[in-house]
Length: 399
Image (cartoon, rainbow, N blue to C red):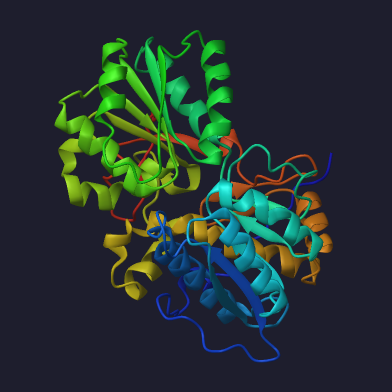
């Protein structure tokens, strides 16, 4: 068994003076060009500004700490236009024309999966937020993800629903994205292990305009609680809005998307939309009463974000930036740990490094799993829109 190493970027990464919302100046020959690719147009266009802000927040702070093997990182953005085929073309452009040396993105699995062979062929390490179980080390030897797989996001919710809330008739609903669709079968299997096979399974399309048909179907099936796994904050908001419309306030247990966009969604819908809503979150972003105030890595990052991002609340708060921030943070850790941008070398270093400290808590990749978080990285939170003074969410399982 390899010995775990604890690595963290210096304090300047979290507290240095950064300009998160301004894109970096044109790259010089000495700078490290980092492809930053996600949806800036199309149905998923709301993702683009949030992820670009989180990436830039981290990269500016990394540069202040010494950069990527001594070189300043510069983001070069690519727009997938919410279309996997266009996303591959954009990544090909970034590789061939922009001469990028590493890749951040994309965010949703259906865009990432077809990009991975191109990144592998170019020997570029790629860190995404995709959670499709098809993203194995065999398929993507240079691909890593900051997202827990869908089932790892939801196991804690299933356990909490059964063990703490006493629910027995759970419905399961997901979007039609690659991550969610791949996770549904695994979530169903885990639910069956816990003796609560779903009474009904429903699906909705990205940016759904109305989810009341699915909600009525789940209510008619006699569900006493709902598990929802989805990828974008707009869909979490629409689900809660339509649930409020039909006044069906059974417990809801959501994936990390529910948590990460709760602040903005509560501003739009009101706190009442979150009645009986629980969701999963990285343990490093949570607290129990009595835990020290303002000392976590996330709390320190949040202080910088509040100072440097004028429309932070509209984006969903600092937690909405965490996935992007982690991606850039881990890219720097890997490149600096390996001492090179060579994709194969960075991947090999990640697989052997052991536990790594991030803004969201400890994570670890192995040669058999390139998803940095695992089920032990995730806990259930209560009132996801309600934060402590330092931005942390209260764990639902505090004794």
